Image (tube, rainbow, N blue to C red; front, side, top):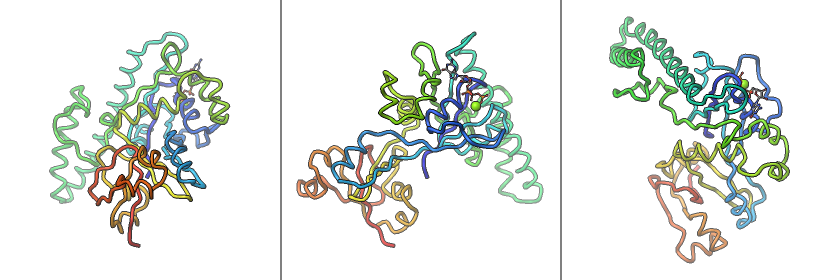
Length: 309
Ligand SMILES: Nc1nc2c(ncn2[C@@H]2O[C@H](COP(=O)(O)OP(=O)(O)OP(=O)(O)O)[C@@H](O)[C@H]2O)c(=O)[nH]1
Ligand SMILES: [Mg+2]
């Protein structure tokens, strides 16, 4: 499954403009009142060089799913429970700019959405407990404690006790801040328009990083993500993984069948593959290793997973 991010920010801060910049969708489709959902490609220059060395016919960047909800209602924010990270857009253009005030309002909305969510789950689990499911009684107690903490003005992010995993709070997710406009900010208005051009044409219009590059850079740092590669003469492909995840997790990211039939994994670093020019030469110099399921994948690893079908 690709990595998934959700856009949050006060009304008119530029979420949908960023959505356009990230996904390249000129006018986001979707039902009124429903979130826009689109796919973005994670830019990584290493993929082009890998494809060159392996003479890959096809090049597939890692995908990122982007969810852009309309507004900040608790019900709408509920759509973001499954995302891996939140991207907060802060308005730094137009009249009456106040980043501190806006970030406080946004934080409050997230806390309220979590409180709403805890309340509703508590109601449901209480019902189940009444009808005699004993294991739910523990969850009732745990939810009651979490709710008391939130009602006292706290956020689940600083809640000391355990939070039921099914809760998927918003306030505990990694959060990346994107400043829209002004000094030191990204010009999302421009970025939204450039998203419709080819990468080469677009780069002529900007000085620094694109909105996509800046967002992905901060996201990978904040959420502890890394990129690994697979490659052959058919296809060079980039994939996203959480830091600390294993070769078996990498296999599962590619396909559940590959994880199920996992035998072993050939690993070579991107640098070594570029330096030696081929898997064969890298193997001859002893730079290619055979690893098992528990091998912890590093950023830039090029993996060749052997599996049974
Ligand atoms: N001047 C200026 N206008 C911008 C910029 N970014 C966005 N806008 C404009 O601000 C308005 C709101 O932007 P949106 O991207 O729709 O904001 P949003 O956060 O999606 O708003 P809601 O979905 O209503 O919460 C649009 O008219 C944009 O064209 C910017 O960097 N500079
Ligand atoms: Mg919008």
